[in-house]
Image 1: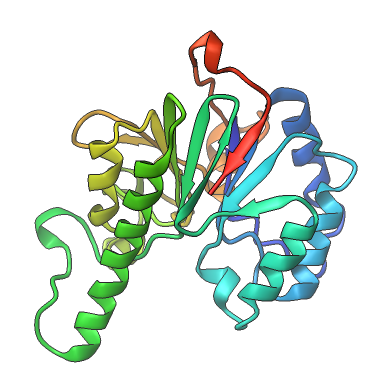
Image 2 (image 1 turned 90 degrees about the horizontal axis):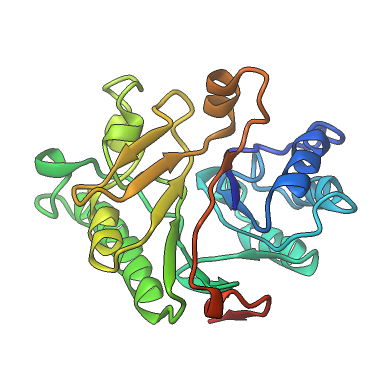
Length: 249
């Protein structure tokens, strides 16, 4: 599985992502995109991304949206454009491919651990916290419905503090929410992947030791040097579950 986020594909990105996708096609069985697929959430940007993928990536492509993908209010149209090109955008649902169930949500902000924002005070703060709670519940529901022997969480916002630690302290609470960590632990996911934190840390773990990978493209470019900037994960599965068919819900 190859994972990368924060492509920020813009109107002028034609040709910029094809070399990356070509390396993915040579290395992986599945491509996972962890949000901020477009720069301003415009349909024109989604069409550029589709052209970058077309003719290059022949493996299944799935992902989640990030905050940038909602910027212009055209998220539904962007999702349709990507879907028509075979890119499955997850939002509280899942897809099973070859014995692995991929559960995806955007996630939300709110902070981590004892410092996480609580639902107390002004109504606007309660609505903010409710958004974080609802995203966590969507992730939980998707993970719970997976029948495949392996589960993987696909996010844009981080579920743990450790992969955003090198970001400026002022923005850390806006880069993720530890509410997302609980369902990942409860359902024993093999890993979680996210983006959003361009200057964070490439790897972390949940409180139960589940690996969490920050796959934001700017971070991977800085960390990998001459290596292709995507995270490649090998997920071992029981032989009887390694079937090519995909099921979704």
